Image (tube, rainbow, N blue to C red; front, side, top):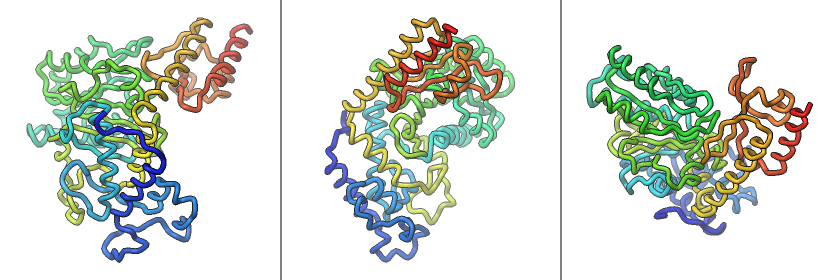
Length: 412
C-alpha cells in the first residue's frame, strides 16, 4: 500500500487539526467575501469540551466547503486543508484499492452514490457530444435489471435512453444472448454511443457483473463505448474479499468507478465517491461558475469537507490490514448463515465474495420478515425475494435466533 496507513488516535486528531488550521477560520479571520460560515454558534457550540477529542465533529462545526475537484487544477484556497484530506482519501481508494496509477485519475467525494453514478453518466454523455458531435438520441445506457435506480434516474435527467438487460433468475447473471440482441437492435435504431454500467454488488442481491460480458458484446459490434463500475455497495467489500478481482483500473476498458462510504465504511450519509481516468472529468466543466476559484467539475457544486474528513478518519483508523480483518469477519458470518440455510434446504442467492444473502420469499413467513426487518425486493404481493445484509451490527447470536425461528416455521 502506497498511501493507506494505520494511525493512532493522537495522529488522527493532529492531522485533522493541522488541516483545519490551513482552512479559513470564520471565528477569527476577517473573511468578508464568502457566502459561508461555521455552523451557527447559538445552536452548535464550537467551544464544547468534547470537540477537542472529536476531529470529525470539529470539522462539521467549522463547516468547510470542498467545492471543486481537487485532483484537477486549483481550488478555493480558503479550504486548502480539507481539500488535501480529500486528495489523501482519493489516493488511497484510486491507487491502493483500485490500482489506478498515481496522478492519472480525477475524482471527488460526492453527496451520495446516486450523484456519483449520475456524474459518471454525465461525463460520458458530454464526452461523446464533445468528441464525436453525438446527438442525445444516439447515446444509450446499458445496465442490468438489477442495477441501482440511480441509473434510470440519470437516464431521465440526462435525457438518454436506458436499455434494461435481463438477468437469470437464480444466478443473477446477465443474459448474454439478450444483451447481444439488445445491442443489435439499438444499432439498427440509430444508437452509436454506449455507456455500459457493470455492478460490483447490486443493492438487492450483492451480485457482481463480469465487465467483459459488456465489453466483448460491444466490441463484437465495433461499438463506441465507455464502461462504468457501480461499486456503491461492493466497493469496500469485493476488492478485499476477492484478492483475484480484476474489476479495477488495471483493466484499461474501465473508465470510472463509484463507491459509497456511507454503506460498508459506515461514514455519515450521504458520502459517495467518484473516480475516473484522466481526460474525462473536464467534459462537465461549468464555465459559468466564474466566481469559483478553479473549475467546478462536479454535479453538486458546494459540498461538505467534513465528509472527506469522516472517510479519512475511518480509513486511517483501520489501516488496510484492519479493514481486511473486518471484511473477513463479515464473510465468516455470511458463510455461517448460508450454511444454516443449506441445512434447512432453503433456496437463496449469495455472490461468494459478498456479504448479502437474498432468500426466496416463499421460505420466509411475513411475520419473521417483519420482525427481523428483512428488505423485500418489492413492497407488494409479487415480492419474490428478501435480503439480509451482514453488516457490523449483525452478529452470530442474531443469526442463530433468526434460524431457530425459521426452523420452527418449517416444522409447523
